[in-house]
Image (tube, rainbow, N blue to C red):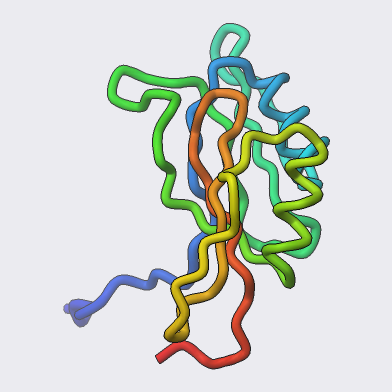
Length: 136
């Protein structure tokens, strides 16, 4: 009889999904405005596709998927994208016409500077400056 495992074999986070109403427009935004790379683009049913994008050196991808019954556009994704400079990215994205928060948020006390942005479908993502201190 085989031993029963006490924990699953989860080794990482590979993909998070973001609902988009127009996949081509979403690719233009994530690749053209945010500087991501398209990692995968394969047909699904009908005209839908499975599309994954990611930062150039990133291992986790964002799947740009059609919305579903309980998976609507215009959501706060909770996704935090890391950067070396929240201020520089805020300025650059604002100049590129991206819908960004009016200013970079600064709470202090070890919380990194960050700001929110919206993709063309109104989905909220966050750009967070990398901190030097290790996570506990």
